[in-house]
Length: 245
Image 1 (cartoon, helix red, strand yellow):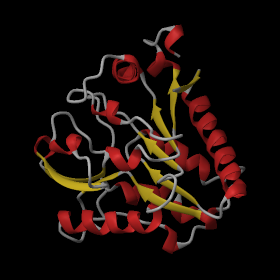
Image 2 (cartoon, helix red, strand yellow; image 1 turned 180 degrees about the vertical axis):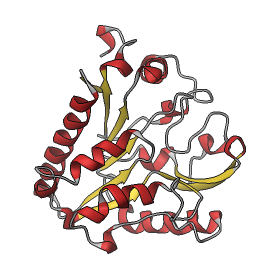
Image 3 (cartoon, one colour; image 1 turned 90 degrees about the vertical axis):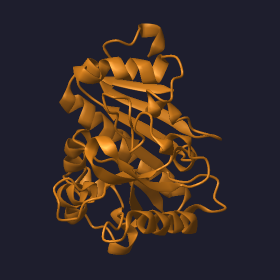
């Protein structure tokens, strides 16, 4: 486990952006595409905004980057709650990316149909490959969830399917999400967490006793040679002991 802890939110965002640019550049020396699964939520917004501006904008060969999403609220693209809409507005509309390289969840389809269609795309990309995504960006909810892997939901036990849709009673909406098996086969996975309100859950997920039902983010555990990174500001990291960092 690799912890990267920053003294301020600005340093946090700049540090992640610097790391991402270097990682993308290094990967594209060895292969002709870079696949990334984006996170929704509030934390990545400033990061995406940075990446859409110089010097980051011209430091990435956007034509070779293929975009996916970790999960989605099952609302129309026009809805402000839609994760893909946020990424388009802040990043994708501002960089030189190929439209065919962007794979958002299709929320015009029934949820199960949309999940099956997305899973088919992933299999086209990743079957018979040593890893799935080159990078998966993840957030962390203060209830221990990541992606749409919420506490005490059936999706936590999914072993076969790479994508699932389900009705989330507490939010009264359908969600669609990558599952742990496809994420854990990624080459790199990065949790991006900031704020003192996340400190307790960071400690439990990263260093606490295994309790998947209450802390679903503990399901994220890279296989093969995959690497797990934690990018934290000092507030989110404040409950970690020095020997845990």
